[in-house]
Image 1 (tube, rainbow, N blue to C red):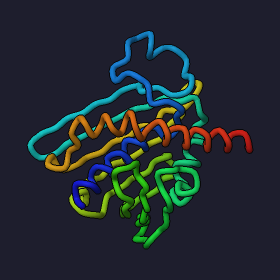
Image 2 (tube, one colour):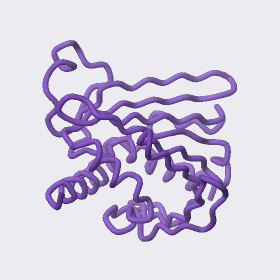
Image 3 (tube, one colour):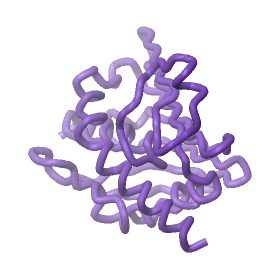
Image 4 (cartoon, rainbow, N blue to C red):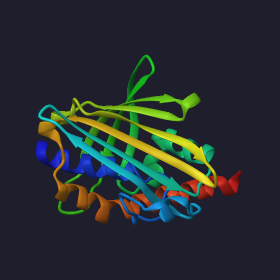
Length: 201
């Protein structure tokens, strides 16, 4: 149960890296030409990973041609994720503690992994377009991080960070599953929702 929960939670978190996107393609270390060309669709700007005996750290920066206000609006509507993200069958608040809200997320991962519930504390800081999160279940309980949305010329940068105990770090094969199997669908779900909101505005 713990290993299954860790696997799907890894896929979920990797999916959130592409909140604004329409494709999972990109390079971890782009060259100058890649960095300087206008944003079109979505591309990975940077991936950084560090690991010590005590902690594993991950940072991903993604560029997208969506507006920062619309991107933030979709991102911060955590309860709404269950209405447009196919990986969730429901997302509901459980309790609040100051600025934090505990969400129960009913996750419906790809076969052969069974459905399960995940508990995540989230704090929203709209003035910074920032989400702070902390896991609250099984061996992920000490994992935490943040997702930040910021405007750039012609689009948006979404920056994601995750800090975990080294023993809970995700192996490369899990990262590959997240990038190539789960991300494309979740990215399209978010991208479609953001575009829909931009059209309504």
